[in-house]
Image (cartoon, rainbow, N blue to C red; front, top):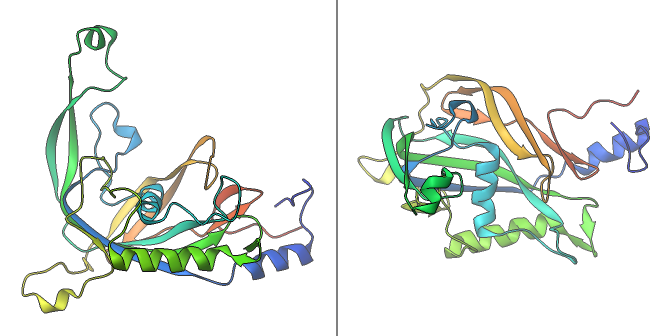
Length: 254
């Protein structure tokens, strides 16, 4: 790993870096709805959904509540890092067709203002619990403020009040949730979601993020071989070095 000057981090600097990231500021939410779509890139023009949201999709759901904590300038000083997703309803797929009117249509369709029928295989009747934490970008304190802690406090307060910056969605914008908020007590209802503890899935090429940075990144998809165990998918550990995302352990200094 390299320092801000471009050279390798010393053992002491690496120790300080790891010590700074030990403090956790956890956040979480539950989201449920009749339909969801988290497209697998390898399924092409007739996309098929992953069985649960990607890391970047979960990050976007957090950001629907709070875009970021800003201490000056236009970039946030802290961001949301999803750490795990829990599946609380059985994974079910159904066929779905939408009249697509976007820029990826053929030129003749655009000139005639004609829609393109886009077939897809989506998830239906979903409920997820997403856990994460708040991570500072750059210094752990920006302008004398603990940005990660401030972002956590803003998120918890706004989620409890039902306030958001924009409407959260389950992948595609038209798939709005029927519930989005703090964890619910499902024990009080006779028929309610339960953690799918018997569900185990292998995800050989699971998309984490399309970008190489937590904000204003460049296109650089990240894939990992992950597993759903007992209905829970745990994402790799995330660190930010020189403004760039790193999934997995930070390498030790030489």
